[in-house]
Length: 522
Ligand SMILES: Cc1cc2nc3c(=O)[nH]c(=O)nc-3n(C[C@H](O)[C@H](O)[C@H](O)COP(=O)(O)OP(=O)(O)OC[C@H]3O[C@@H](n4cnc5c(N)ncnc54)[C@H](O)[C@@H]3O)c2cc1C
Image 1 (cartoon, protein in one colour):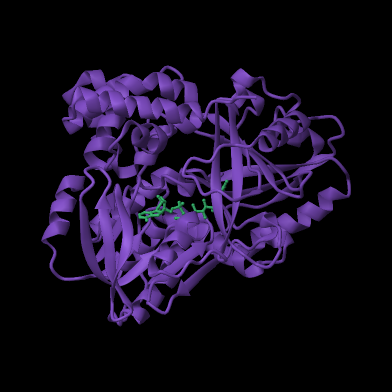
Image 2 (cartoon, rainbow, N blue to C red; image 1 turned 60 degrees about the vertical axis):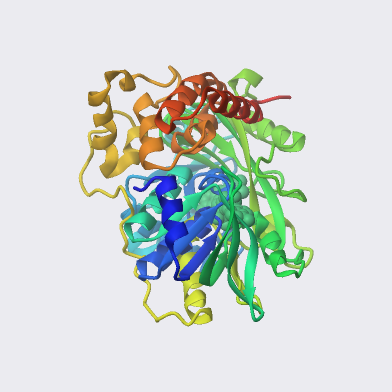
């Protein structure tokens, strides 16, 4: 993998326009760039922060068809997503796995209702099914979900869905782009569009690390800016603020003791008619999510008091007691870019994606889900080929194995280490060079110092936040432990990137300020 500096130098040398230029390095942009590079198009992606900095690192970590959309009778979305789920599992088994879910039933009538629904869900996935769904007795439900409220429990329904690590999946996509001959660079912002005869011919860009401005020419420009897509459309000089409705979703992370075992809990209908999950993840338990319409599009959304109240109430209702403040290890929120439809509530808005081609030729792709990122990429690049008159090449991403794919079992010492897939032995070998890198970053976290070094050398990590939030998932698992680990990470980063003491102090301070926002406050 090339360093960021090498990629920027190479970018400066390019004289030919790129075939495809993608703005935004979340799931949508990375998926589009993989699709373009896999078709042999000269592909560049720019991301103004870090890859998956915004919504794409803040999902509920489900690779799913969406049981809820089945109830809304959105069969096409469910079918598409179930197919994608199957392929994500095949193409990145180091990052996606099958997880058992149990829906506890507190009335006898809900057992057949959800039982039939989940059987349909299983059948829709056809050959890509992850396992059979079935009704459970009260006793089996309590065995699979120790910790769930027993009072009034009649039984449960077991079904299967996928789970993944979203930010690590983004890293695998980034590396796959490089392997396919494409280029993806973080901390480069698109600040405007280059126009020629009324058509988009590239972007104005800024290197966010040194402030240098430059221009990049391209035949097709794709706007994959998530909740900021309208701001990029406005580069055209045409304000466009009627496309997106933003909905915020928040999660609590709790110790696994709240729901021990390896099964996830699914509540099909909360007080506001949503689905709520409690899911084991990297040794902790994620509880979420909420769905609250919001106006602001900050890159660091914070859980609102009503969301925290909602999560506390539902944890108390289904897991026996509300968590004490110090038991809430991390609180994080993400913003959904949903495509507006009249006055429809955000929880009822479709999770289908939308592609818009403006008269200037700018291609905007938005909406969708992580699970459907590949399909969104395929559709987007079909449009890009049309707009830019690129040679027609069929998609080949459905069966494309992502970076890290391995058909063999790895010598992982922990569930966490599996995310490195075929890279794992090289990550572990760093400790042979320097045995001090074998140490754990923090006693409460599964990460080792060698993973920090690996992230800088091979995964384009540039800051303490990149390492603790997205290359490892420390901030999302235990914000206090992440803050305590930050000085060690800053030291390693300064050494690896040859940064000054002043840089280190500033980066450390900015991480600690940000991470405090993940600590639970009443
Ligand atoms: C709370 C929540 C839970 C979810 N759970 C799930 C789930 O369990 N499963 C699932 O399948 N889906 C889930 N989703 C949906 C999924 O996370 C999103 O659909 C997906 O992450 C959106 O990706 P994106 O690339 O469109 O947006 P983003 O990830 O936000 O990426 C957009 C990127 O564009 C960059 N950018 C913006 N402007 C510029 C510019 N001018 N120049 C350069 N870069 C720019 C931003 O920095 C950002 O990184 C969830 C969403 C939320 C909010």
